[in-house]
Length: 300
Image (tube, rainbow, N blue to C red; front, side):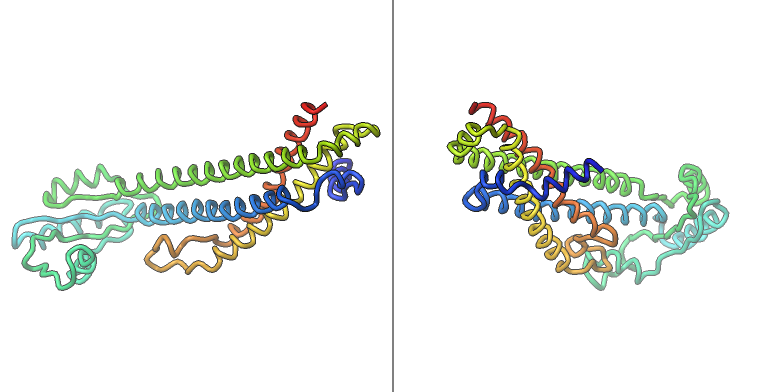
């Protein structure tokens, strides 16, 4: 209850103390502008981090549930090898389904690299078999051993070499997003500190008069802290709203998973941007409070 009362008193302010801080001017505009700009950038850093991590996780999950077997053999032996592989897969625990891709499906996979109308019948292209795993998965080492004995021309690719880099990329991008947000917060604090110091220097005569009539440093500092905290909150709120609007206007994600069209928030993720204004206000509170007490101590 006492903490809530203190917050209400802080928000209500003191009309006499507020006169110490100029309501307009360069420092006021600088605080609002910096807070709005940094909040806008934070929204995009947050969206980029979440979207990239989400996309990498989707790719990783999709690859984790599937595997591919490439069958290479001399002419006339490919179909026998495919049949042998299918027989092995039919008796392999952890394999939910398996099917050999048709020529049209293989042509569609190769089209982005070799163009349309690829003559598969005249090229030594291996046959591909798609393997769908159960949630428990299969023993990749055991399956490779069986394939080596019963279908020597078959090579199993369980997509491990694709999955692991995606997981590492997702972790690094999340870390990069967090570091970016921390740097933005530090920059915001530094700029607000400079603005508060400039305001204190500009009002040095007023501060001297207040001290002569008995005002303590805590009373004077409280006025600066409150005014700059509210300015930062207002600026961050505006920047967050514009950032969220810009993200909302981004194109929807395509079925192909195109990254640039998937940049944005999903579901409850839309709540994250609205934590930015109170966090910006907290940064401003801490930065201004430290700057105010340090400056007032130097000017005694």
